[in-house]
Image 1: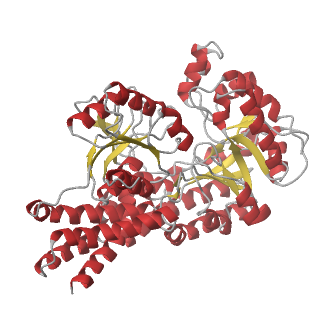
Image 2: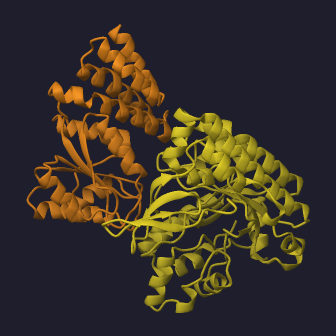
Image 3: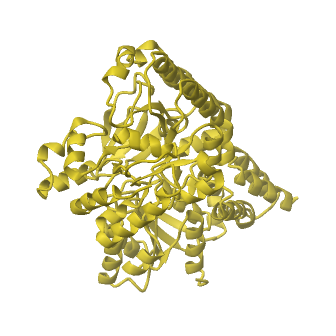
Length: 372
Length: 215
């Protein structure tokens, strides 16, 4: 069987010869660390991104089968984006930067972390109409139609490849910031926030539609959201449902029309309270199910929604920083989850600095021994 | 009359209606309600309700953020009256995201919730060195040091802060509280911090308990 057949069979509750060894990429700092330790060639530590040829070479060296996060899409965000530029350097050496999204972030040279958000542009109707709405419109150049017309002949057939549907709320959260989003929804202009979500979603829908109309075939479709954290969602489930449900349904109905029946969604954090909206509107695959740092879980979702919910992820990646016993414990847990069907084990996020190369090799080897 | 307007302040604060809260506070003052009562029975009462809902999972981050903003804006209006009346905070905390980590949403949330308990907060920002926490605690006479981390790669800095507090001889004078995605009770115990709390509202409750001797 190919890894594509293995993955698709598992997600359709069909038998496979073995479990594929699936991962979700790395922090760049980890690859640098491994290169400095002499574990991997130095040239594989640079320019290595999801699905790249370098990553595939690294997969072969380590023993992975593939990175699940392999989805192609369109230019379906702000176009043009705002100029990324430094605004000022602060006395402590940190730099205030305007980002592609029009957010003012504070970054610090030498510090690897998501930056602090200092300010943002999208605060009112005028900013939306003049600065953002024109950047959220659909136009044909957003989609490389020529690429998709030849997609079925040129795509890799040995691994699953998905259609990236974009994001209904995650990118809006990035543009408005968590605070800005909260103020707009609850105090300042709820109608404006709904307009922002609707405008952006319509553009993303048209991009997906244009791709699918070319006849390109995909194994799955995929969203990115990251709208939850340790204590649950970053907005109330009721507001989320009211603002977003219709957009998931419309986009997922489109996918179903073109034969795509696996629709995954990447959301960090504890996703339980938003799952009903996702599942009821056609999203059926949880990813990456962050059990280690955040405490998300697959089993309760399966109990609640039955086989309507599939999963890719759920392996506590922090075990790969400890020892073989910790990894063995996770593999045993992965065996039990795999027996439920419709579940592919995968580290629950990108492998971080301090992850032990030999333990990753060990995990990749042992996970393939799972028979289902 | 006074109960009605205080309830209105509390309810509008819970809904995050900062503008309405700011309109109601002068009305309450004009009605002869003393500023400390407005603070305690209007603003802080509202924050207590939203904090409890957040802890039990029926309110979410945005609701807390907008309520906290309403409280902060209301409290700023009351500040001169409170100072005039000699009302002081129940204690002082310094807070920051530890060195190497620039995340600040959780830290900001905790800061607002602490203020919602009547605690004065010195915000050291993000990427804060252990020495800065200690120096601030000494110079500003803080009874609490609150540490936030979102990364597994930076949580170790919390242990450095505890160690530096011991070295500086202030360990018995300050309570060190920790929070953030990668940390838990066991980690708190391991590094010798005083308290781990799973969310911002619990942190504010625990901080108040420390400061009022009810821990």
